[in-house]
Image 1: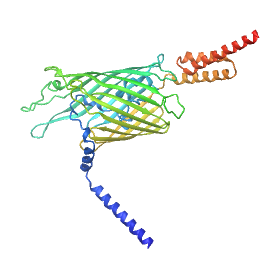
Image 2: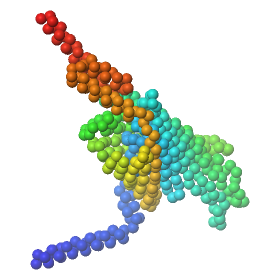
Image 3: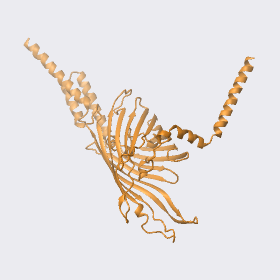
Image 4: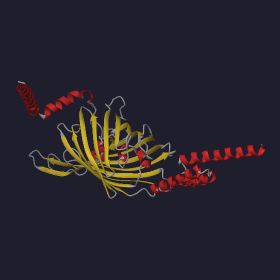
Length: 437
């Protein structure tokens, strides 16, 4: 009887699961979108899509997109150029990168970037990128015949500089940076409806020139750090993106274009244990031409799990408007080349689920000897500790001063010298008191 009851209960559960799965399979994508849209309907922004140069909101691709674009407070590779201009001064290595991002339909974004820190001024960095967004622009007449075919483009060139103020061993410094950008929107010429002939210069009147800047700050410190590393485990970043204007109407009547997609973002990244990094971003869009229109903010989160020194798994979630964006990817490093591959299920940029893939390749060109210098500083410091333990305080001071010649902000050596001098003074006072007695 027990076996029979158990069989009935098990059969009932299986039937229920089969019915549930069949219902789930029968549910259309439209139903899923409706549920998601209703859930986040309060986040719908009625002013969305009213800005120009929308490609400025598209990430380069690869790592940042895998992390859900939660990058303002992380910025640990060259993709900082898109999110926080202050982070160039804390990059470990000189980098050259190529990015490819397949966006909506046939539109694509291609980017070439470069960043480096100066050898003689290691807390100063410079970088830049050239980015081109393009999509086919095909015109048809009333009969459905193709009469013109070209590309709509948005090209942006940027130069970046940043400096890490008061950076040392204990206090990692406050990094500040700026990126100056110029963009050109290229609209192809279109045809005359009557004759079908292309009107020369017609696209120029709808093209646009944009001049803008990004400004950012980044603070690093240690908090609840349960592993040994020179790198801080908490980063906080603030940045303002695309602050500027755009003009259009060339060849006709020059006028201000629609506002640029200006945003202010705040982000934080946390690494309590070494393999796992969490990042969070809050982004507030702004309309610099009309502050009376409040824009709905959006949120990004990211997760990075490092399985080994050469491979990491990345995942992210972005909530912008009423539809979410879910992403995941892997990052590999082989022979100083770092590769990223990202997969995104995007309900934000399309009315229907859209699967996108972005790729990036970064060439790591070394740190200009900074790691060798750090190793030499550590060696001097360890030798000084040995002298200090043997009560050879003068020798310890000499060695630690050599360490400070290589890194004047190496706080352990500064503190060691102060302690050694204190020991010398105390020992001298003891000797003098004994002589007086």
